[in-house]
Amino acid sequence: MSSAAPTPARRLPLAGVLRVGRPSDIWFKPALSVVVAVGVPNLTLLALGRLDLAMYTMAGSLCALYAHNLPYAARARALARVVLGMLASVAVALVTASLTSSAVILVAVGALLAAAQKALCDATRIGPPGPVIFAFISSASLFTPQTLGQVPGHLALAAAAGTWAWLVGMAPGLVRPHGPERRATARALNAAAAYAETSATASPGRERARAAAGAAVHAAWQSLLATGARSDPRRALERLVVRAEIALAAPADTDSGRLRSWARDLRGTGPVPRVELASAADELLGVEAEQAAGRRPLADRLGPLLPFALRTALGCALAGYVSLALGVGRPYWALVTAASLYQANITLTWSRGVQRVVGNLVGVLLFAAVAPLAHLGPAALVLCCLAFNFGAEALISRNYWLGSICVTPMALLITEFTGFQQPGELMTDRIVDTVVGALVGFAAAVAVTNRRAGDRIENALDTVERAREHTARLIAVERPAPGALDAARRRLAAELVELRATADAAAGEWWQRAVPTERVLLAERAGHRTLATAVRRQGLHVLEGTRA
Image (cartoon, rainbow, N blue to C red):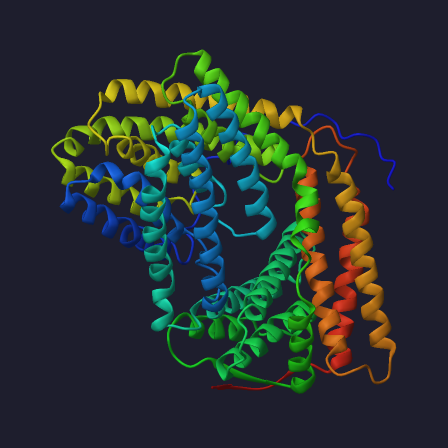
């Protein structure tokens, strides 16, 4: 165990927090999906004159935001779990709301739900938008007047909308069944090309490029290993990912232009470029061995997340209670603001807090401008909400605060589905709750330290060393078991990605012993040297580049 001294106090960053980045390469997919998933139920309720029930259908419809990067076989399972998780959260909220009207109890239940949602979303790595949608829906449901007799009907509406959202999420697979795997492979090829182009330099940018390429290759393998049946197009994709691995092992000998050309070919619907590799049969056996290995049990993944769950529970509860003490009529907004802050470490949590406050304040001004239009009638209200749904997903990948500019007026308009309200009162409550949630939520993050961050680095270093030694032993064996070296190589690559993520997370934590930066760098370099040796030992190289 390292005995390094505690890290010095860190300065909270401001530069770059609001910097606008490039949009996600599939930003339009969640944007269009949520419009369809939300629009059909809401327009149906509008036609029936029951727009007051839209909050319940929104619970199911917003599930369409999830799992867009997953292959369709894995997406079907993930979306089903998201819908079931949403229904469970709403059920707890609605039953609680029907049994008590005590705001103190409602805030406590909302905070516990938010903590559970945070832990489960992080443990399952469901990805954006993470637990914030669950917290938003369940917290709003807690403060909606309810009777026990109404709960089954309202849950049925949420389930029907969730089923529709599942169908919307799966529909693109009818046109482009291997789309997610193709995109993941293209990202890996582009990242490997970027690393190869920096291989001649010794700048910090080279290390960042190698880490990014390693993460992209690992993500591509995760995508391919989640697909189940191994069709011919998928086998061709596997060989392209191996080609990206070869570029990581031998960047000086890599033709980055060819990698980028293959990546461009994968963006469309044409055939997958075929790359023939030496030792291809061994490569495929290695994939099969990895598929059989499985994942760690959920309980093991939940353990390290306890500090984040505690931060969430404490921060959300305190934010809600402070909002109640200030006399704000919608304390769940403060609760949701606090829930939205918590990231991998305190530094990132601070950045998210700044982004949330700026985005919400600008969003309140946008609501003031749009409210007269939305108040023209129920149809105008629904259409405005749909427009903001699209805008939020179109912008949020560029920076969280940009997406919040659209999320804020959308959330304010949703409260008016049961009847138009005074804009001034809504805006005041939202501003107060945003500031309270951000300040109290961040204070809770500082108070609940992540004492396990240092231990996780030590564990990650040990795991990488064991994986490296195992791979090195297989390299020394004259005739290793079929597929064994390839599977070991990818396990080592995955552990190196996990080590880098763990080190980056710990570097942003406060009140911890110093991150053993030199040990991490040495472990990464030794690991990458072993990976390169494994590639050479297997004799993996490109034999021919043709089109499948």
